[in-house]
Image (cartoon, rainbow, N blue to C red; front, side, top):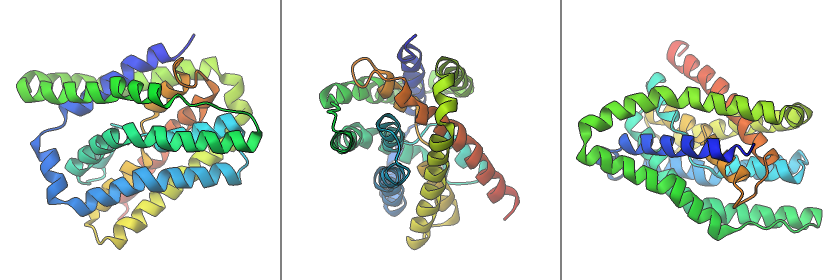
Length: 284
């Protein structure tokens, strides 16, 4: 069973949900607080892939997991980051803005960075690994940008219905992702356990390092505490569904094993960021 046919509707629903959460304030927030947006996007688009690359290289990860780790690092922020930001008493408007902006920017940065990573791995192992950049860009536009735009327009012209739809999708999103993770785990149980040590360590180090670096970057930018919390969460929480969709897509990599880092990352990021939320909320 190719999980892409399960991932696709979940990913489309998540991006539509994000679109329904956007309003004019989301865009005004960019002009009103450009420094926070720039710092958040820098952590998301530049720091995270750089950290992932060096971790994968230092740990000597096999090509399929090297690219899998890079893939999850190149994806935009996950929609759950908005909920985590709210629980951590962060800047929810900034979180929604960063998730939306990173979702659009990574339409173009993800193919570019993954092409470089593919060339590096190909040179390292002496086997050509082709990345169909054009197909990847088209798939991202269809699965990400169009649902995001549709959700935004739905809220713009049908605000009452959009609010009800957003509440329903918000409640259904997490269980749907957990079902996806379970199905994927059952399909690749042997491979996951065989590589849980190395991939698990890589994912934990990636999350912790990205949170630390984004926190330091936010402090250097002298951002308010709420904005700092939001950026830490936003950079640490990735769109695992998108990474799985790209890895398992018959038009891109068509490789279920490449999605294993995304599955493990999704589990670890929820645990680590939940602990972070508890810390900042109750142990300040």
